[in-house]
Length: 390
Image (cartoon, rainbow, N blue to C red; front, top):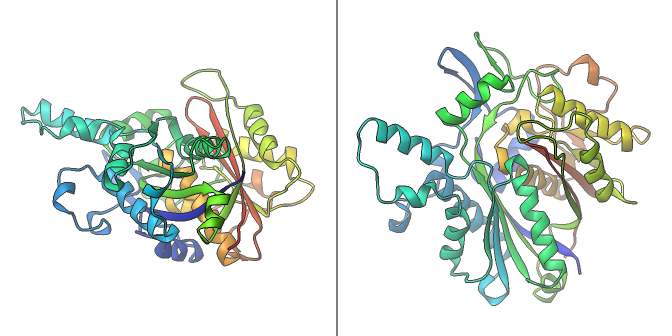
């Protein structure tokens, strides 16, 4: 029993739906904006209020984090053209920070002696992401939130696939939402020297730039994943097949990952088996260790085949636990539109020049895509998404 994808929805910096996201990927232009933060210049990818759907009365007190995922969910369900209450439908949402931005806001308000809203506890609760979808769609089945660092989105897909292919559920709303652009997160990352930050304005140095750092962003993505049998029965359009997923843990420390990348290689090996991808949609960020691990994986499995590799992080930034879903949705778009999106970076470091990194849109048929993801604390995730059919 295969798991297939029949719907997708998205919101991020500079795009509010799949059509706009497709345009961003095709235009080879970064959507990130440089801003000054406490004397440092950093790149961010914010979702602005005008990008969000007009509020209904019951959404007035909801956090941006929840509103983003509800908007993406609405688009995904509409594309899948499915009545989710007619099936055994689960909701599984990933998030790296959950309601961290709301906690930061509440802490600042409390320190200033301001009254805390009675809705604040609900908005701080990461589980509000999954429960809000369940409430919106009146789903009474499994509703889970996975807070598993920056692999959270791919972890949600992995669990959905397990549940569908073991016949425990028919359909799963797989989502992720993160709002990490707040004082707490930025101040936490700056001492680690992993953000692209400088005393003076700089051009965007993205993935494979020799350790210049990453750009922090926010957003939400949702996939409708269902049993292939159900999709065929209801004559759904299949956007992609979830051929394989794999997750591993370096098990070294909550503060670091394994620089050898051996457990990332294990996850990749479990996904490729005998099916090589058309290209790799890489988690490369611009962090030295992360990018080196991606190149190590490439040397191990793909060096002889010269399969193209790209990373969208210079285009849309790194939205933490949502990043894998941005990558998966980009892969589904590239399968549908027959192109490989480029890596956007002011310069590719000389160390990476021997690798076929895509730096401008590459027009070609795409049959399957390998997606890789890393998480702070040693999480690794990988998925192989293949072309579907009607």
